[in-house]
Amino acid sequence: MDVKYVFITGGVVSSVGKGVTSAALGRLLKERGLNVAIQKLDPYINVDPGTMSPYQHGEVYVLDDGSETDLDLGHYERFVDINLTKVCNVTTGQVYADVIAKERRGDYLGGTIQVIPHITNEIKHRIAQVSKTTNADVVIVEVGGTVGDIESLPFLEALRQMRGDVGRENCCYVHVTWLPHIAATGELKTKPTQHSVRELRSIGISPDVIIARADLPIEQELTAKIAQFCDVEQKAVLPMHTADVMYDVPLRLEELGVGDYLMDKLSLKASRQPQWEVWEHLVAESRREKPKLNIALVGKYVELHDAYFSVREALNHAGLALGVEVHIDWVHSVDLEKGIGWDEVKAADGVLVPGGFGSRGIEGKVLAAKYAREELVPYLGLCLGMQLMVVEFARNVLGYSDANSTEFDPASPHPVIDLMPDQREIADMGATMRLGVYPCELQSGTRAAEAYDKLVVDERHRHRFEFNNAYRTEFEEKGVQLSGMSPDGRLVEIAELRDHPFMLATQFHPEFLSRPTRPHPLFLAFVRAACEKAEIKQEAIVFDQEISEKV
Ligand code: GLN
Figure 1 (spheres, helix red, strand yellow):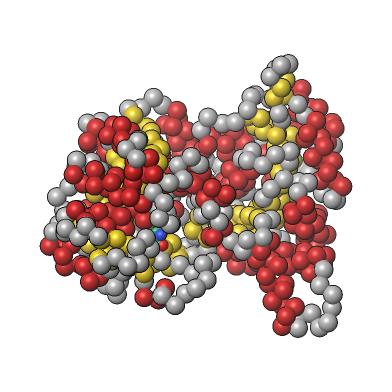
Figure 2 (figure 1 turned 135 degrees about the vertical axis):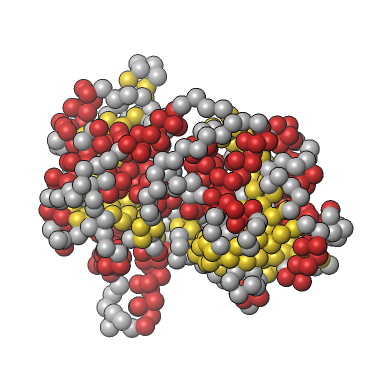
């Protein structure tokens, strides 16, 4: 069977939920028994988002193979329950870097290198790589940004050419747009959508499906108008007002018939009927009034919640499985240093310190760890959150008041967190950390082993610094269990406190492997401990035990 393509473009404005929509469409097709892969084409010139500030870009999502990608890949993995690979995120930077390297090698034999065909061919080559490296029947390709952006033109041209290359019958173009609301007249307007479709047409792409997004319900009259002006079948204009629960999006799209429409359009055969019971259960649970648990998330990019998207979702998944609503109090670590924000921390049933880079706000996170340790408040540390739990313990329990990570104090006399030896010679910042999945062996009888209920786990990493082994014995003697280690015994992967209800931290990022129907064991254990502190009765809700598939 030919590989089928669904191309997704955005119109009018960005941030209308194109990533979630793409992920949800992927779920619709997976529910019909198809193998689905999703690729994001990002028009910026950075090679990957790994070096970008979370303020610019939100979270950097890490895949099994260690690629640092756009956070939309997190939506794809969570909604479709697949593990993607590096071919699934392409940037302009990668495309140009490759074409220029080939030119320098002389591969083009004296030709003039141009956007068309050289850049567009490289883009098409990368789109083809997805089906070549996976067993996907359908590849969904989402283009970042909005139609009309100068920088996305080569990508759109490549998508246009794909129709000729792989055949019209194997391509479907979906345009996701926004209907602005005019408060004075109480109307939603379709004009920007009409203009955006016209712009897309001028590039040579006629959308087959228009997903009209708005903050308010969209009347049929408006979808009829869009259908007429944009020359799209009425049933292919889908009114999607903002969902109260993100995981409701696939259910709503199914109701609107887009799953069957895509199957039809691409002449695909379903090998099974969609079964939405699990997702319906998930959404019903999300909406149900539940006891509220407060978790203080102490970070430095807290103004932008997207910077911690996977952490937020992992907490949400664990809460859903335990029948509680996890409410996150976003606490700025710099504030804690100034004595601000402590009311939230003190009111919290658990403290979570996520990953991060650079020295701003570090001392605030150390104070949060100290508070959690002394007050016996459940604590979960992720990557930097582990390193600072170690620093705090060294300063206040081992008595090394000058202990630090050499990331923040290269001259610290007690560098309890230090650069990994294989990082010392590295000068480049991009894609040079310890990245991706590595195995971790757990020590039986520890909280970590109990939570996972197994002794070897694979987890995703993104760090340069590590626990300094010279201090192992001292920490262990004073009550820190190094409950997870790399199989060669060299790298500390998990540290936990023996005499504490739950103070556990990981060098890896468990948040990337949490799935809505299968919460991550450590998040589950943390939320459970927080429930106990808050004296909230937990439930044990099992959504289902789907086995995650590698594409
Ligand atoms: N900055 C730390 C390191 O490089 C922690 C990284 C992180 O939290 N992802 O090791």
